[in-house]
Image (cartoon, rainbow, N blue to C red; front, side):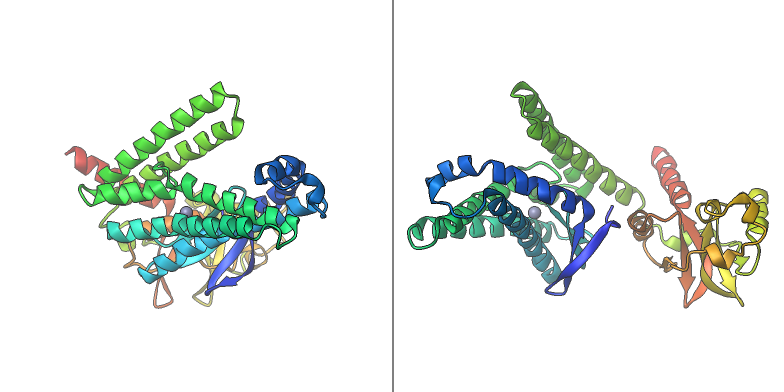
Length: 369
Ligand SMILES: [Zn+2]
């Protein structure tokens, strides 16, 4: 999901990345704001004729400033999270808002509540300052700037309020889960919080359909999917608890040499029924090769091409002592089929999604007795 993003800079050491969907929505937002300048200026009590700038230019500045506000909101989550010892990979800005990519949810529900609350709090304060500034400075600054301050202020206040609705995946949903988790097991707390989120989703969906407000219907879907995913994630994590990578990995790793021909590799894939292999040179792992790499070679060229020409040299590895959930997350995040299990640079095994699913089924059988 976060592969198609470009890094535009760092804030307090946290990479800030733009997803390509953001680049699609930006001109659209600028255009929509530009078209609505008349309504916005009426709401702000600023006569349209007093505005000097081109409405679409104002719309463009508003769109950029809106995303900057979202980035600040996420940064606020991130800085509090870091204080609580949670590692932040990056802040991703995309089609709808932003996401701070965190390593995991903190153990202590109070910490989670504080991290979740930090975003809306910042948006609320920022919104208040902007609206206050925009109102007080009327007549002092140019009307265009006053309109920008006021509108941006309202958007930030909206961001704060919307995010506090207790419906996963919003911040309010996290605060609610943290509150419940102080009183019951984490999984149960997540289930209740997710169900409340789904309830909101249904209400928004019905309201949206009745009033033909399709943005609301869209938000309903977003909340419903987010709430389901959150519960699923925690359910899987809970079920797999206690497994290490070494418990579920395949130890008997079959490898291929860099110099063999692709046609030989294809034969081995058929015979051994493997769709991917670690690649070695002089006994050292140099990368991996999968069915996907093979498919990019024309069949008639397979007997002239070597594995080293098509292999991927990006080794995604995991330590055998690591928690199995970390392996699952790496597989999903990097969108790869398998991880190499390496101990002191030695390949000791391989772990795939289906290895992890085996562990999952094992636990399910145990729990049924
Ligand atoms: Zn937030």
